[in-house]
Image (cartoon, rainbow, N blue to C red; front, side, top):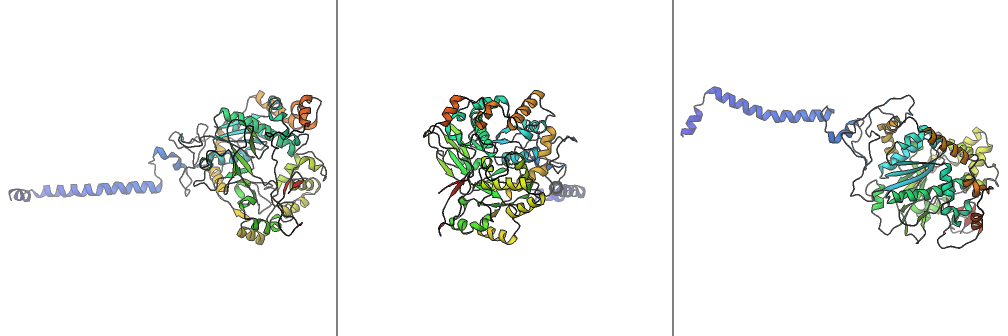
Length: 537
């Protein structure tokens, strides 16, 4: 009672002060919470250094980092403007800015830790950079680029050499001499592809480059190696994440080789300029279709072309890097000491953007010096559509060529498209397009170009260009000896090449093969493989 009486006896001024203090302590946290919400909602200047990358996302975009892309407060953008740079980016506010010191890092606990891709290319940056960074996003750590032609020029190779995880190998005379002494050069399994130009010559180069890449990959501690062209993208469907790493990690440990069936681009217009960014429709591989669907709609799917696919249909393969691994042509791998355990994936694929641009007809024609006759093109091209395309591109007018392209390549018939989409022959795939578009809009491509060294050393550039020119126009003795039977041919090697040996280790190289074809010899479908104009049932 005494205490109660004492509290009631406090002066009125003290009661007023206590009331105001309680009101202030109540309002203060509410005001701070409101301020924090407003700042976050409006993108205020208060930022968390651990999420620096998200501050640079375009307004309205999803603020997330693709797998394998580190974020760090040290990765603040540094813009460099140059009129000499190729402007591949279209936004000044990158969400995934690229810097020379920015690594696409992966946690040490993740497996496989190292996945590499090897390729042989003469393409430019507009094709190589989207291809490369897309594969970085899905988990590829290292690239072995065997370059010649345009890809070996200083404006292109200088940029490529500045990118972490990229090793550029030039087709120098030293490389050709090294490859002329290599193991597969003197083995018979690749011999049927020698002495022929164009696609056959490229196939031999790719195989020799793959052998070099194996040694480099082993020295670097790579876990898996894949050979891809720069018009092909891996589509890791079937993984719980959109990740090639996870796809390979989930495989049994005794799997040595993994086949990715290929899907072929199906363009809907004749004015495609950027296949990776404009093509979303693909024709599915025979391996991913019910046989009844494939053969039942075969004629409608081919549209009068020689085969179901315009070009190859036997996919590409990933190999576990291990002792005695060797290439088996550009599409497969093998092993000298054992029969590898090979599996074929049920969902994942390689997306092949073939003849996606009208200009592909003339560019392929210009790369080959064969005569446009039915007989001569067999020396140059393994597949029937390539032969037909070369002849028409060499003999027709521009207008006739465009008409032919629309008839044989472009899917202009809307009703047929819808029918084959419903039946599952055609499918829509948007994820690669979305990833590459996000990278493009972020400024990744323009940033890597702007930060690259201005020039290469003159000696390196001249040696690569001289060698590239010699290998394309006046081939050096070492590389051409088998291709055209030059005077410098090693007689001992030639004798060995002419031997017909049935060696268990020398499985014949796997060329680009067409999918199974439908024949009219019987009412039932006959599965037939076509390779180089010869078919085997």
